[in-house]
Length: 258
Image 1 (cartoon, rainbow, N blue to C red):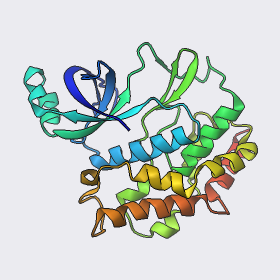
Image 2 (image 1 turned 135 degrees about the vertical axis):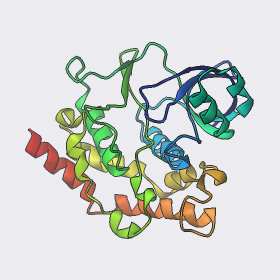
Image 3 (image 1 turned 90 degrees about the vertical axis):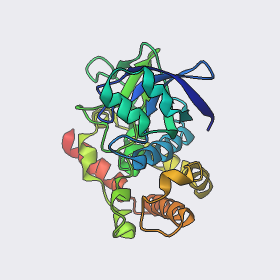
Image 4 (image 1 turned 45 degrees about the vertical axis):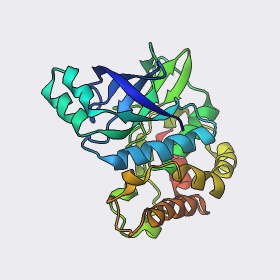
């Protein structure tokens, strides 16, 4: 992942619960910035990196993720006191998502996604326990007639409580029944093998290694960031082992829905 420096705060995106913002960076790019000082803290950024890059490794369309260095002095040009406080609390390394100008939120009535793509997204979201892909909050964008996945900060929610981690790795994720693409996911059985094969140990380890140490510090009961990283790897490896309860639950949920 690349690292850029934020040079200008452009505008807040108030529809997001964590108050993300559009910023300009020193590479002349525009990014949706996820602040480390937001209410969800750095665990949301950890989930964004791990889930977002795992999705990309599986061939799913995710805008580029970059690390963004934010100077708290940028807050001086922002008149809103709430945003000033957020910027000042987020000095240092944050996360940016490539801004897709002109994109619109996915509408399941207007758009009919390809069954293979819809099935792969449903499989993946069940795998990483992403609770934020519902009709209420799809976190899917249409840009140049293509579907894009955004906002994975609510995924991997096991890391908000590390108790019984081994058991929770086998969580069937019953909330998959609320997935906005489940009605279109008619190829779940066909994608299970290919999707599982993309979640290799080497891929998982490489992506977990991307997470900055200071995002992990103090976020777990582990003594070192190395132990913390290993816990993410172990969870994700256990989750892909047979029987894949999350996959079976997705099949069951779709059968009931149809």
